[in-house]
Structures are given as C-alpha cells and as structure tokens.
Amino acid sequence: RRLSSGASGDDQDESDNENEQRTAAKDYEESDAQHRLASSSAISSFFDRETSKEEAKRRRKALQATEEKLSHVKQWKQLELPRFAEAQAIVRDLQSKSSVASRTAKLLSARAASFPVDFYLLQHDFNLLFFGLGSKKQLLELFATAIRRFELSMKRSPSCALVINGYSSVASSNFTETLGKLVTDYLGQPDASVRGYRTVERLAEFIADKVTVATQRRAIKDSNAAKFAGSGLPRSAPVWERDLLILVHNIDGESIRSRAVQNALATLAATRGIRLVASVDHVHSPLLWDHVQSAKFNFCFRQATTLQPYLIESSDKPEQFALKHSSAAGAKFVLRSLTNNHKEVLQVLARHQLDKNRLGMTQNELYEACSQNMVVSSRAALVRLLVEFKDHKIVASRRPANRQETLFIAWEPKVIRTVLLGESS
Image (tube, rainbow, N blue to C red; front, side, top):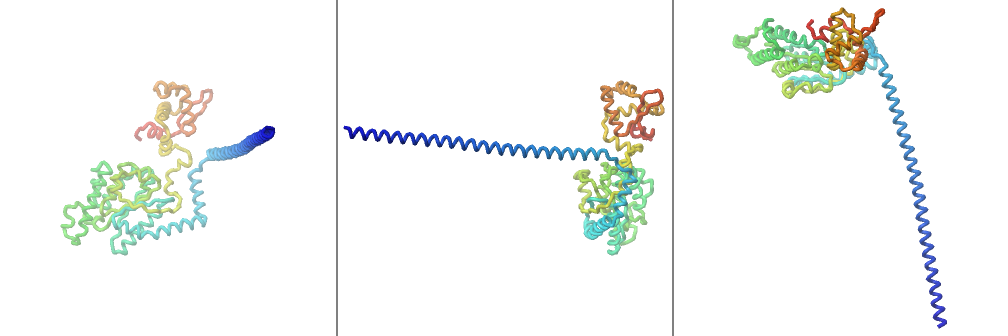
C-alpha cells in the first residue's frame, strides 16, 4: 500500500511538471508573437512614413514645375509680337546663314530628284498634292519647269500653265477673272461668252466641256474642217495643241476655301487634258472636300518638306504681326473671335460715332443706348465687354477738356461701314 501510494505521488509530480512546461512554452510563443507583431508594425509604419515623404517630395517637385511653366507662360504673354518688317528681317537673317541655306538647298534638290516619279503619276491621270513643313512655292515652280522639259524631251507641245495663288487675300475675288482669262487666252473665246455665267461653277463646267471636245478631236491628224466643226473653238486656240497645267499654291488657302471655288477646281481637275498640281499646309486640309470632290480631284499625296520660310505667302498679312487692325483685313481678323453680343455693342457705338463725326460716347450713354436695344443686361456686363474691346485694341478712349471719358472705335470710317456695319463700299 505504501509502495502504491509512493508511485501515484511520483506520477502526479511528473504531470505537474509537464503542465508547467506547456504553460511556459505557450507563454513564450505568445510573447514571441506579440514581439513579432510589434516589430512588423514598427517596420510598416517606418515604410509608410518614408512613402509619405517621397509622395510629398514628388508633389513639391510637380508644384514647382507647374509654377515654372506658369512663369514661362506669363513671360511669353508679356512679349510683344514683332512687326511684319521685323519678322521678315529676322527670317532673312536666318536664311543668310550658310548652315540653314545649305540645309534647305539640300532638301530642295533631294525632293527635285523625285520629279520623274511625279511626272509619271501625272501621265497616268493622277493629280498631285504636295504637303510638308515649309513653303512649297519654289518647289512647285521648279516642278512646272521640269514638266516642260519632260514634254519637250518626248517631242510634245509644252502645256499651258495657269498659276493660282491661294494664299493671297484677293484670290477668291479674282477667281472669276482668272477663269475668264482662261476662256479668252486658252480657249480663244470672246469676252462676251464669260458674262453669261453668273457662278464660277458654271464657268468651270463650260471650260471643262470645251477642253473635253478639243482633247477628243486632238487625235485626228487631218487639218480638215471635220476636226473643228461644231466645237465652237477657233483653230488658233492653244487648246487644240497643248494641255493645261493648273498650279495652285495653297489650295487650302483661306480665300479659296469656299465650296463654289473648290467645286470649280474639282471640275477642272477631273477633265481630261487638264492636270492639277497643288500644295497644302493645313493639317486638316483633306476635310475641305467631300467624297464627290475627292473623287474628282483624284489626288496622289506627295511628301515635300522644304523647311523654307513663308515669306511670300505671308506678305499680305501684316496685321497678324503688327497688331494694328485699321485695315479691312485686320478688322475681319479681329471680329472672328467675337460673339454676336460683342458685335451688337460695337454696332451701337459705330452708328453713333459715324453720325456724330467721331465724337464717341461716354460709358453712360453707351449703356443707355445698349439697354434700349436690349443688347446688354447690366452695367457690369458692359464693363466686361469694354475691357475685352480695349484688350483687342478695337475701342479706345480719350478725355477732352472738362468732359467725361469718351469711347470710340479706333478704325477708319470706311472700315467701320464695310466690315462692322456691313454696308457696301
């Protein structure tokens, strides 16, 4: 009995030791886990602080870069545009440098090496459209001279050339006169035949019909009356022997972008015996034509980067450089950026100015006149419009002796009548 009781006591001691060991191990594991958790949270918070610092640093750099860009923009806005004569002098000075001149000359000669390919495309009923950076006027003139040499080498009569300067501000108004010269000089028709056509589209159709008849009968080698009978064209007309080459500088020019002029050019380009070579500078110039006009033009686009300055093309647009809009072209240039509400206020001031011999109006008088015509809703709106007018240099002010400040339009009376009021000259 004593032996059994001693054995059971030993077993109890061993079980207690095992429980103590398990508890100690469990406590160690829990403390170790808490230590690891604390260390990991400390590490993560450290990296979070580093990430936030880097983010703040990136934001400061971005803000600094934005401020620098804004400062550059402010400096650029404060710059004054050079006058047109100054701009031309700058460009000529750049051209005089040997490096610039040699580079443009190399580009021009490299492009001229592709003239045989261009002439081949013309011979296969394609019209050519040259695009690229730089003025292409000299390049097209060189190509016209090359076409003449190619035709002479083929023992053919050289083509008659018609040059249209689309960059000119008067190209649209002179387009009817240009087609009239084509009728009289190329077709040999009298001047009276031109007056019967009121639109350039009908006149272009008349020219196309006559050229088609002459081209079809040109294959007849005999010089008998059957070749010329019923054509309505004299035997001495150049159309019987020579094709027509139309050279259009800047077919996307602002003055010839109208649908009527583009339709007339497309009709001529689609005529057998007439070839069209043109240049474009606007990146969206193909949007000028719908699918019918594009099919008639049948253009083959040709790369022609010359890097030459647009001296001749910009020679009749000095108002964009000088910021003086006293001319009719300059006034139209400014009015494009104004809304109808702006124009109505200017028209109120213009009528009073013309009636009172350029005495102008005070701001109160202008507000009362605009309110009667329901042009402006409040005096603050009128003040905002006047600030814009003065920024555009349309409206100026003066203060006569012992009188309030008067406002007037700083344009010539003829320009005010024709451009702003729409009266006929």
